[in-house]
Image 1 (cartoon, rainbow, N blue to C red):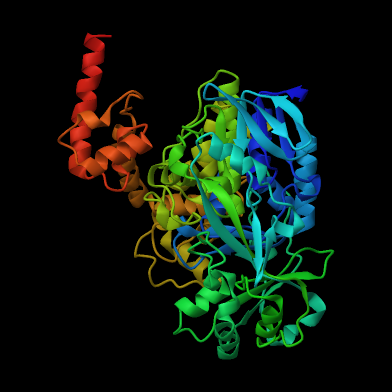
Image 2 (image 1 turned 30 degrees about the vertical axis):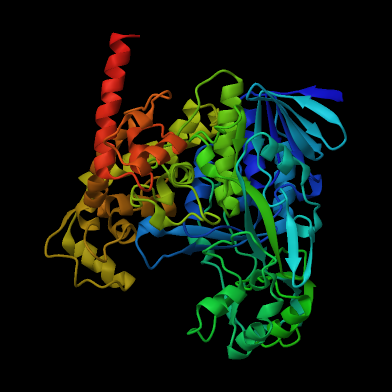
Length: 632
């Protein structure tokens, strides 16, 4: 076996998780290599050509705040931008952009090539070299050996991948890649608990075959209101394309039901568990029999291609059935399929076998990220990749690792859910998964996480300078709003000129901040009277408005967070024996022994651990610590 290199960190896979892992590790100064099956699919979007969405947009902002790449890449390559959930409260506002798929790949590939301390290799890793419970290196299909101190597995859906289209099935990865099968056996042989999950993607079709006159146009937000993902982006943004909506109908559903026996999902060929919140069109028709139609979003794959993506029509039916099904839909009567829809099964790990650092409990130095950890989605993958790469590098360099508590971020919530509760199907981030949504808004990700990124070495001087400047602008404007009085007559005159309802503005004037707490009073309206704050962007104005208007609710949430932090600070010793607590239920002891929670708070979030069990555990940990102090 040829020894070809020596690294601190090796990343397996260069999808969204692998990109962030490799970049983070290299930025921290670790000698890093990333291996990918093909350089032509770095940052590939095998499913939806978009970044962000409900809760996912929060993750992209958090990645950016910590010093990651996804937000910057999305801003550089977007085609259309929309802020979702504007009709709801600010806690669930989420940015989503339609992205040029090919340009996103090229941007990310070049970013990795330009990253110091990072080598990019095309090659398949077929085995890990493990000795005495710790990873020592990796072996490639060409017989090369690369020594390392840590490995991040970010294999996406290629690990044990198998494609299904009707009765046809074959080993493979998305978009014609070959499957990575050898590594699965190595992991099983070394004690990793693997499972089979499944996902799917719709067909890509030719633009010329769509009758857009029968579809509903879905434009992006007005250019003047567009917000970037990255806190670094300062250039003006412009939408370049429209998206469209059409719907299935009873005839579509009839074709699906008549051919259900030809679906590998219903015929028993597919054994993997699919994503609950992104079902195939077959699943939708079967599970929601009362619905006469389902929406289909028609989205471009790029500026320089005629391929269109049909979001909402994921399927594993035979190609001939797909043709018949699509052509029952208004606007699709003459549809030309360029790439048929397919389902894919793949191998992933049980995430409860990972620590909150994303390091494996089975083999030291091995970290997981993305779909390998049982999640779905580019954004979930990228967020985990950043954390796994950061921790792998810091461990390799002999430094402390980062654990993000769930009250700090959606990333912290995501990881805590994975390692504490586990998953029964591919995990998707949603705002409802967080108890602290008002504090974890997408607009304040920089305040929450950029100082952490700076402390742990990911945030460079340029980003830190932008952050500190933004904070100074915000604080200065907040002070101005809290100290500048606005006469009610002036405010009502401004409202009349702007065509704003004056009926709920109160009967007296007050400071600008006091008035912003009243219904129908916005920062923009206040600015008509006192002027726009110096260097305040529209995004900053909305952020100030939110923090002033919801100050009482945010303060209440912060009190709840401080209460939880007390339990987060109670560390459970790594050698604690749960079987020695007879007053706890057997179920709790078994689950605590399996998960081995890091803190008392994490223990309380394990399904099956009751408040009574937690109280008993708290007392037992206290006794354990006192005994160790007395008898070290």
